[in-house]
Length: 302
Image (tube, rainbow, N blue to C red; front, side, top):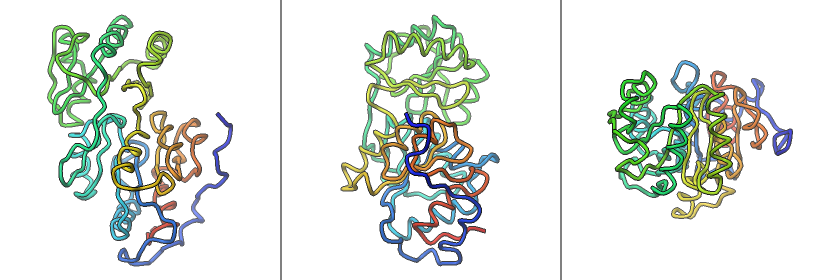
């Protein structure tokens, strides 16, 4: 891993004029992306948990130009649907949920791709999680499956409520009656790092691991991450990797930033995300998304 972003180019408050005042009906600039993927927390949403005004205008401009918009998140599909409705993001999005494990077309509700964690893989990593005393959650459809002992845990309730899920407690979480698409581990960072060491030592070739926040570490099937969702969609829609752009800020965005034709790290992002990106923009509270997209679409930045 290099110590600098792949392309030495950043966007600051001086980059506000491109596309300013242009109507949303204007066509895309030459070479504009055909698919743009967005992480949610720390990227698409500001600290106030809503998109910046320029981001919403950018969504309108991308639609007018025929560019597809993907929400790529660790959140489950019901959570992405609720977020899109709450924030007024439109009804023609591509949802890449659970770190790329499930891809759904919002308009048709068609599942475009699904990559579950095999049962023979899920069981030992869940058992390791229990051994380390962390809370294990399995998002599955409209449910959040947890061990019965954690059904009333505050973070379990928070995760379920924030994503429109119903908590279901089971007696033995290590032997779930589902094929999980993601295993979510919740604990303080030192406990998660200790678990990570065990998982990488014993299961490295079976899973992908990524941190989505200070207290969340997520496991998906081997070879499955947010970049998988981009490749899945592009393969079935005739879009080249060079025609894509991705925005992110955290550890579970790194593969997506590397895979996209242009990877954009937010100014508030972690160093690993910035090192993986082609472009480092301003923060999620300073129109970081719109400042970049204004170079490709008719976007006004106030």
